[in-house]
Image (tube, rainbow, N blue to C red):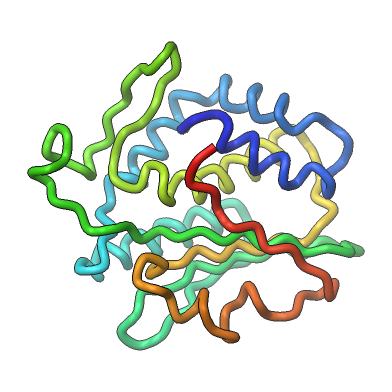
Length: 208
């Protein structure tokens, strides 16, 4: 993963955390944990995520749910019959006046392995480009990078002892590429009222 992804999500939180430079926090954390972060991201990318493979979409959702829960984040799967689950997590901060919603999706476009460089889109490869390590795999950008950046940003803030001052919501869709019911309807958790009554929705970025 490229550092700008992590820095960008930390910057999104800059106005709602205690005073400390978020980019510096990102650089220090990723430098100290780079090998482990590459391993974790590669494991996530190795799980196929195309719409025609519902069993693996469920694997993705279960892994992401566990990722939230092991960080102590209140989380659950929001499910409808015949559709991939939305992974939903929330953090309520006492006295918070704002709520930030991070939306991303864990499903990806169909891919033909024979047309993929190396023939294996779900076998991540680390390459050095212009002196910078980059991971190549299906959904390494759109959109698992955004999900992993959110988790890593949370870890970086926690490791640095930086307390949150806003409520957070994580909404990770499993069928965005197929025009998700959850993201397009009024039933979307991202559109529900929040404890503070004021919210900001931060969609994931696929390029920086």
